[in-house]
Image (cartoon, rainbow, N blue to C red; front, side):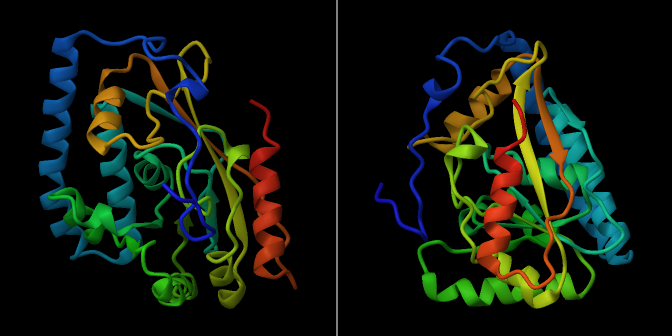
Amino acid sequence: MMSSDWMPASPCGQDCIDAPGDAPRVWAPTRLLRVLMALGVLLAAIPVLGVQKLVDPVRGRRLMSSWCRMLLRSLGIRLEVHADAAEADPALLVANHVSWLDPVVLMAAVPVRVVAKTGIGEIPVIGSIARGAGTIFIDRLRLSMLPSVVGQVTAALRAGTSVAVFPQGTTFCEPAKGRFRPAMFQAAVDAGVPVRPVLLDYRLTDGRPTAAASYLGDESMGTAMRRTIAARGLVVHLRAMPSVPHEGADRRALSLAAQEAVSAVPA
């Protein structure tokens, strides 16, 4: 894949963190049980989305957060939140991008809308859930649509809703490997809201980093999902950092400050 500022290509692969087979795996019956439990949680999204339409947006997003936590548990994944990323005032949350699960992890921790690629919206069932959760979709093949997406994010922020974005543009095994593109930071500038960096870090229960949940290189979504479901003792750590100074800053200054904040977090 060719790399550009709009469509960066990740050089990362499974061997960036752990060699194939290094991550402990659960038995086949456990993998099957996880699949069945996840399917049950996906079906439970139908009444959740129905109730979400009947309550105010804040309660609706909290309900979706609870559903996301259920989905993570069904997959055998433990979420550890080391600092509360939710604040009274809206903010643009900017996170490093590691896994196909990253949007679920963020929504599980924070009642937030996320920006995701259009391909997510085209997946049966999952796409419907994403749309119901208020996901803002971005088509990386159509650069001309970028101002519209930034405008949607700005409108959500002005309406009092926090939005989470992945400014690296693709997945990397380590936060320091991909630079934060500045485009989405314009929404924070236009809305006059703070930017809050968030680190997503996938590890095993013994503290070792792992690529078991990663979605890297040219592998398919199915391959990434199967590897995640098979992993034993997977823990995702979410570390929210203080907002970067935003008064008078432009989007490039904000992107650099957020990138440095995420990259500087010790392993």
